[in-house]
Image 1 (cartoon, rainbow, N blue to C red):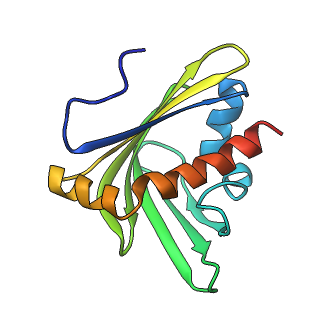
Image 2 (cartoon, rainbow, N blue to C red; image 1 turned 30 degrees about the horizontal axis):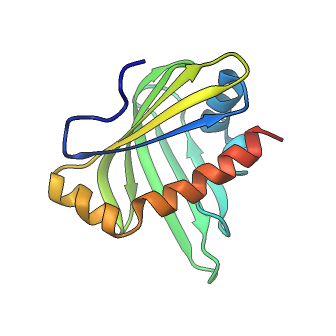
Length: 151
């Protein structure tokens, strides 16, 4: 796999290695019964409202915030290359809109290396998202994913 750090200044990238086989990590990203167990930062409960898992299909997940309010996330699948790559548009209204998530899953035997990249419309928007806690939010979410797939 090539260097995950993009030279595109609009892209923010995170890399994680899970002690779980690639198919399980892929399934966790693509199946409702798995998504509800890890999607969203710690303290949130997720409900899969819609999951039409095909290129051009849409998804919508609602996260219940600790204060009881709902936070909707949604997008459209752009590219699906099972079990290696997933690309989707994404809106996390009102905080983050009109971004593209790219997730690459590298098979390391009993481990999986995940390269997660978010492409923003501008470099300034990426910087704003970083300042708003991009790495903390996704880091907490990926901590939950790690706990889930490694059980």
